Image 1 (spheres, rainbow, N blue to C red):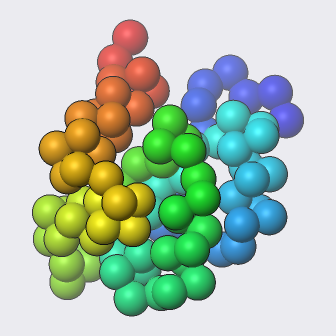
Image 2 (cartoon, helix red, strand yellow; image 1 turned 120 degrees about the vertical axis):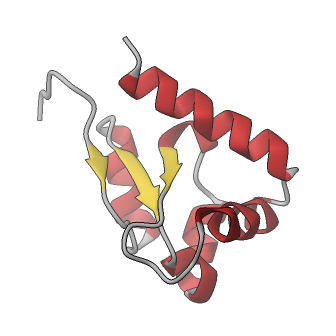
Length: 96
């Protein structure tokens, strides 16, 4: 894999091994509503670096703020700090 742009997985909900493989290859993981209800995915999410994640709602019954809130609880992080870090990821990827 030698992409010329950043790749992003949409709605990542797989295991830690796949997550680490994607990250190793420069692929960003986007998490959605699954982190609210999937305990196994929460454990995967907890162990990943913030620099490698985005959050999304895409066709979910949950609001993005609920996903950010759960993500901050999982990471044991201040909500505003998490929002700022993910916003920086967005800018790094999309703003050129």
